[in-house]
Image (cartoon, rainbow, N blue to C red; front, side, top):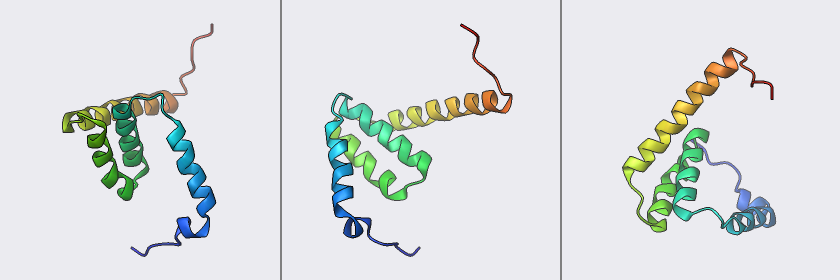
Length: 95
């Protein structure tokens, strides 16, 4: 696969600003954040990020392979329910 243009070189201020936003998101437990970031990277298909996130999770503390599997299964299960509800145009109850 051919590497594309370097986004960091093309617009460093924007990339630095995006990184700064990430550093401001501190209310979430670092372990949970690492798990969520890993799962989002898996969903989005970002090989680079999927490769990096387990290391970040381990740096954040006790983080097991079991948690990765369970988070993946929780996400897959919810996605299945979403597909069923969307496919059948299920609407929420009136309140």
